[in-house]
Length: 206
Image (cartoon, rainbow, N blue to C red; front, side, top):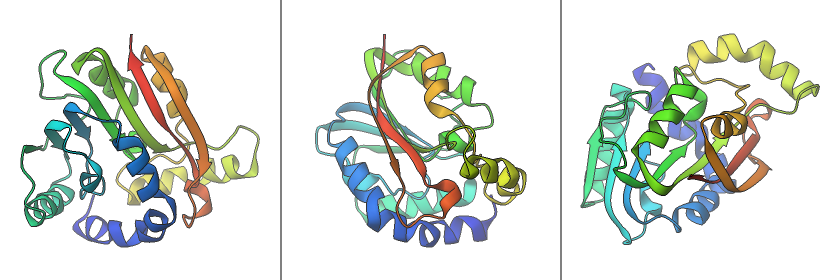
């Protein structure tokens, strides 16, 4: 991802954050506690929603431009008990069964290998540990929106840091052996139409 893309990312997402994403993050993250890993933390849009029940928070962001903005955001908030890593979701720098929760927010779309990333998440979760997810996803098969997603996907990936418009993330979570305990499907308000379909919820390690 270029410096300019990283720099303008928050501005690009600002209307959607105000319209719905902030509320969705707050709803999901109030359930999170203990040792927590957030993969692909970006510039840190979620960090203000973690409660004091989180005893240890590890944020990973492999993109160097995003990571620089993430570090600045964390330092400006004077947050404690936070570690920042440039590791990837496909190769998480942690021992097996290290975390109570893993958080993925608008990141599964851009993983170079979603299947590998989800198996790594499962590996580092403790027994009955949970994946908290908020992701934009493929529209339903056969719809005009899905056809537009498929058409635009190659150029979108090129300019948006490998972001896929048409990933079927819900099925990938299930295929990785995680049990979805709750899920909501909703349109991301104020976003451009091809990224509006979203899922959010909680999946548990068996």
